[in-house]
Length: 76
Image (tube, rainbow, N blue to C red; front, side, top):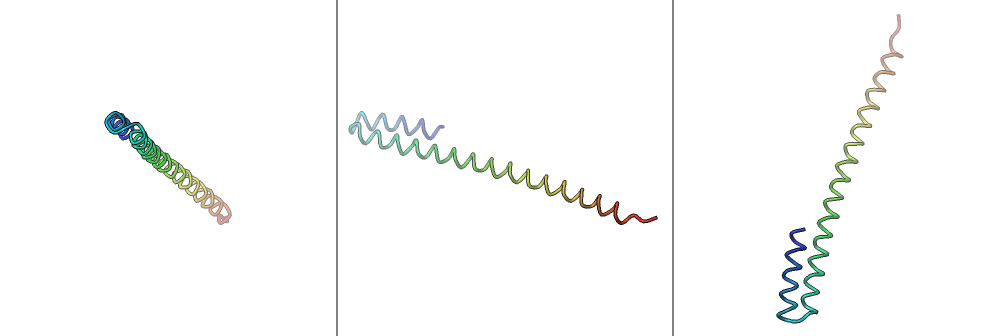
């Protein structure tokens, strides 16, 4: 967000000083950089959530397998 606002301010200044097309290019680059950072953050959250889900499923499967093994092994 800060990167996009900085790029926007820089783009406005460059647009006023050097002409509109250069200013718009700087704004566009800043917007793409901010969007890339947001996608990377989202991807990190997805990986963290999926990893947590996979580890939870593995733990549940392990406990269930141990319980079944214990019940089948128990002979009186």
